[in-house]
Amino acid sequence: GAGVSQSPSNKVTEKGKDVELRCDPISGHTALYWYRQSLGQGLEFLIYFQGNSAPDKSGLPSDRFSAERTGGSVSTLTIQRTQQEDSAVYLCASSYQELVVDTQYFGPGTRLTVL
Amino acid sequence: GNSVTQMEGPVTLSEEAFLTINCTYTATGYPSLFWYVQYPGEGLQLLLKATKADDKGSNKGFEATYRKETTSFHLEKGSVQVSDSAVYFCALRNTGNQFYFGTGTSLTVIP
Image 1 (cartoon, each protein chain N blue to C red):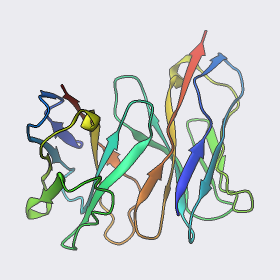
Image 2: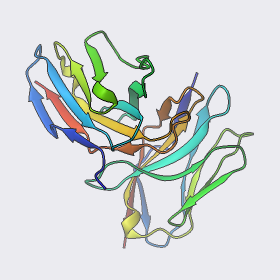
Image 3: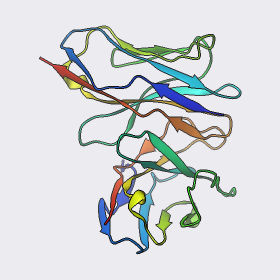
């Protein structure tokens, strides 16, 4: 079946502009994560959605970052007033476990470049 | 807090050599441990996992044992192949379903 998809695959923007990154999880998956992978760094947790529960936003680096998940499916990560240090690959992952998240299925990522 | 520290790369090995990639962790509670792999041009995918102490995860000839006493989850393979060339990430999941990843270790296997 279809895996996790993300769009766009690449995004180049100017400093100060807002960007929206989209994630389509695997159908039926209740858990959805966003990560950031900067050059030479590991994956940095940003936000976690699980079913209808309030999202875990503890990883968001600043109030310029926000995310929503509509209808328990598609998620959008928004970065306002982008800065050069926001340049990274943004990864989305989903999982079908209701209570305990086990295996995550990753999308191909969106490479964001802020000029 | 929670964190994962893994061996820095890059690692270059000849085909059929023995592979070890070290991974140690710091966690509160009883985490589950994972190795993810990212092949060139592909997304991250689960390689193996272990959910409790002394469990051994295995897949595609790779193994890792959850060692609570040394807080380690080292990845091993007895005989690597060129097709194993990839970036390997160690990760833990805490009781709050948060995942913490290491920085990744790049492996190149030469014929």
